Length: 161
Length: 413
Image (cartoon, rainbow over all chains, first blue to last red):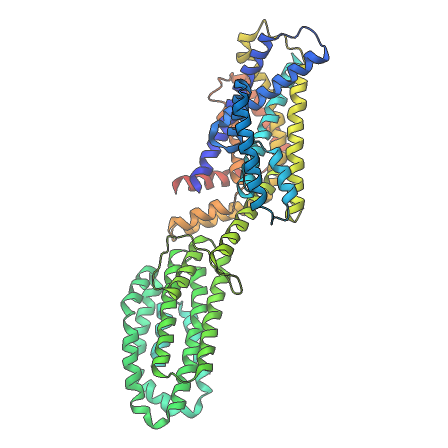
């Protein structure tokens, strides 16, 4: 019990640096590929989506596939890239099945609706029981916090240039 | 014989001298109630006059060294047979007294003798926290069991008194259980090892046992459900520390609501920040190469005050957890010399759950510097706001050392 705590301690400190590096590299790549030419809403929206996904992806990459939620995010990106309809159909089927199982097993919970809501928020949370869901939520919250901090500082640095 | 059994109980359960005297006083009071059997007792005490010296010697040794006491107790353990011998011998001459009174004395005394173990176990749980307590608990239970086994051997008739003894024994048991509930796995394992020994003589102290308390269901499903609920509540507590403003909310539903809101707000913040990043037009073409060397670090330097501020907020909220944590850590430091490290380890882990975050957050300042090559003046730049942040938030420096000590302790363990 002690060792994982220490490990997570070390990994979280390096997690910030890893995420920062990955995110900034992704930003530079985005800016290179698609330099801001016009401020049309559509262009802005596309840029926003790309940056958002870059942030998510670099966060998940920084965590690596150690956690359920990061695995789910990475799988989503992989899926998006491949765009195999068949694969998607299969996985959605699997997801539906798992969801049904969850409904069966967790109907006693008083906080059922809220748990489901939390499942929707935490990536990969659809297939988790409440116990692991809460654990993942805790880790996800920490990562989101660091993400917000780093992104804020990057945005500040951009706006001050 | 009763005189013999009681000191042995005390001796085995490793009482302090004071406790022993108290219990002995108790026993004497009990004895005074049976004045009609005074002569009988005096006879017996005459027989037992040789016992106390041995007993006190054993007690002294056991007081001096707990483990030695354990060994000694084990060495003495064969004594129940001896006791039986004593009882036979004692009851042989006392046949004239009438079996009823003799048995009554026996029962009352065994009742009292089954009560002290709870006290003894309590005292020992307080004193020698971990392993010893399990050993003692087991020992005391064995004793108790021996007692119980012994009594029916002598008499099989009186069921009510037997019940009373059992009740008192159970009371002691539940007392120990209650205490153990506050303590951690190890004790529960000891407890359940007792339970196990009740069911079967096999004792597996390395298992993580879950014990059903009085009135709780004992089938595997409900035990598993209980374990699950405990896990969930533990995680909820952990989340409660993570989510700001969640401390005041009681109830799982409210907490979940708050957690959901917090996650949503963070996700929206990410969304907003990415929008902001998309909106700003960073003319990076000319200084992409310089970006890492220059822009990132001012950015980081700019962050650190903000992080420092948020950190101070975090630490302020975590400050309440800091102090007990420190105390616990120091306590562990004190106990460490006595206890087997297993217990202290679990202590440090289970109680200050919030420490890793705070250490993480605070140490990120120190640990971020080496990988990213900072300029010296940047470091200075950064150090100043950090100190400023700490001083403004009146963040005491002592907790840091305390937690560092804690972490060192953890590492050592």
